Length: 89
Image 1: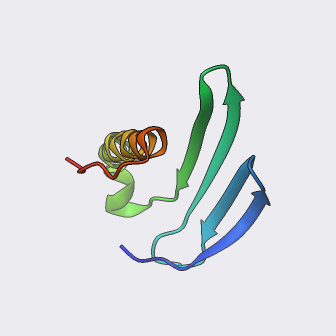
Image 2 (image 1 turned 120 degrees about the vertical axis):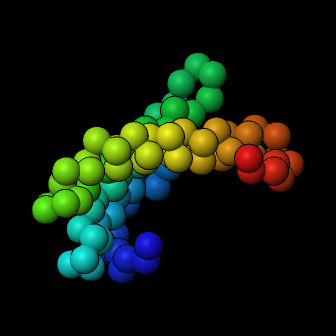
């Protein structure tokens, strides 16, 4: 799904956030980078507006997003720690 976005927050090496400016799929997402003893912790929050039938599917959408983002963040972690392209599953 394509969506035009607008950067709403940017703080170098700390956080960034954006929101969609497309009426068909309104959402906001933010990323926070925190220094930890073991490296960097990356947190994200997604706010997705759902209505009608899409609203009824919200639990399934949330489950799919959590699964997909977990896999994507695992892939990103592997790339950043090993500096070798990994094959996505």
